[in-house]
Length: 345
Image (cartoon, rainbow, N blue to C red; front, side, top):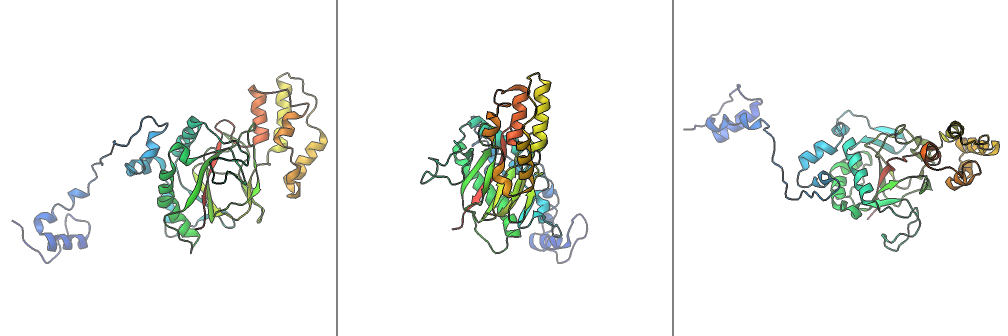
């Protein structure tokens, strides 16, 4: 038998408000059920859409098993972004830095793309696009090519949109409208760098997928207007900035140093390399490291591979060195960042 109470019972329960509501509305018998149901005994999973033919089946479970997906793939510090007194990291003006995804996410996304393997040509002609022309081409794979487009748009809505609304106040587009979602790969024999450009987007996010100093050296993103670079990128962290903020993806910090190191590697391997790269080229490298005007004076990847000293070598330790020099980014894993373009409606 149950009966109604008009007073609180300050034992067994965590909150007087909950106690009063439960006691008055449901009666004392149901009030006693309040505490036991707060114990987490786990949750059910839905295996109906689990596709073992995928390279990374877990990545596609963001809809049907969201609790497990979030626990596995979202950065453990993501929720800290919304703490009341949390100061947002701003490495450059108008550029924000947030922890977003876990290392498992990075590894899984890389594996998805490498397993698919159909990287674009990196030329201006791109049959995947309406009109077939890409103004700033990259070696990339689109999310829709691996069946991940709708999953990524959901990711943008749930995890990226709240951060955008926090830092770019006044812009609201729910759900986010993203027409181009892709993963870029930089390799010395494909595309070692990206020239200065701005994106046809309201805002852009880049997510680093591998580790600077481990998978590649240099890298990062430079914003020309502020003469500011973000070099020490963190895997799983996003850079969020206005799309029209001109920037480029290139690293020059180790160019001369790696050239000198290449010389030592070649000589140590017994290939009989004569001297290092010519003094004039070293001076050009040094000049371009300290001058925007010197940007175009960089020795290109093709220049490096066709010089008399370097043109004969490939593979092994020497090949690895060339990869470091020409690329200054990932050459083992190959994937450096993800870019999502938010186009104004």
